[in-house]
Image (cartoon, rainbow, N blue to C red):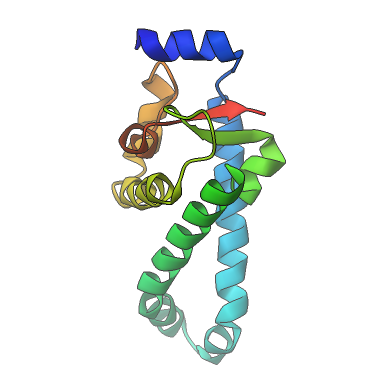
Length: 148
């Protein structure tokens, strides 16, 4: 714990607020939802009832999860931030390198992010009470979300 405090002070980094992280999450989820709707527009329009619409969504759940993992991992590795984080002026850094996470760290973070979502967002809620605002996916990947 002291190591992270020392690191933040030495590098003059400030942790992103939960509010900014929440807005980034909202932006990313909205973008990905619109992308899914666009990709499956014909299937959605072919549904004649709420039950059929639910079946269409359920049919592509694994693809949607895969899309979310690739989106999170790619943008985190390449830019240190997803589009939502870029808009909120925050980024993800690897604690060990203080740089963008590499491909394995980014993939780890993206997969555990999905697991947190599946467990009623408990991993995200964890960040509210964590002294370094680390969600479960930050803890497993050894990352921090900081202000740009």
